[in-house]
Length: 258
Image (cartoon, rainbow, N blue to C red; front, side, top):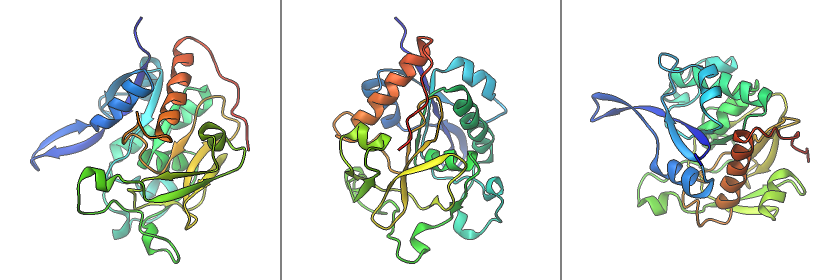
């Protein structure tokens, strides 16, 4: 039987600073195929090529990936500053309405890093442009040097709400994660439940209250070493189960609130 399809939201890149391309990290596809048990399909996140209604019909679930460009502050009512970095307005135009449609329909998605931030903005929330500039916050950015293993190494604890969805999934109220982001949630959007924090108070795990489908999103990068990591594996396994249910025509009940 054909595997359920997970649409992996791609990012726009220039190859050799000249050739425009849509790209997605191989580790995202590996996590979807090897752990979630679904077929990864890279989506060119640009309304010139795809529409949200088409994606909802084509795919059974969505992986909202990380990416260097940030959500444009126009999307949450703030002015652009140098700290906001680079943008991808085409991706914003696809992912933000896609998140809202998935929440309404109960269609599963998993948000990662930028995807985590997209979920918050889609639900009306705001972002800090640079976490490390806030008093008392640590530097959450990817180390500039070193191997991939060193850049994706586990760097801090995430404390989870006791008996919340993430704690129940992981079987623990504290987990170790990597951290490779500059921005983060300032004000949570409507129905966005912050279910986990870094030691400095930065939101790290969210879900949408009373959503009928899988809406878990994380600020870290669980796609790294997903098959072996004790946190990543159950997250992608649960996501894959929700995608398979959707593909089979099963519609989930509302996610239990903490």
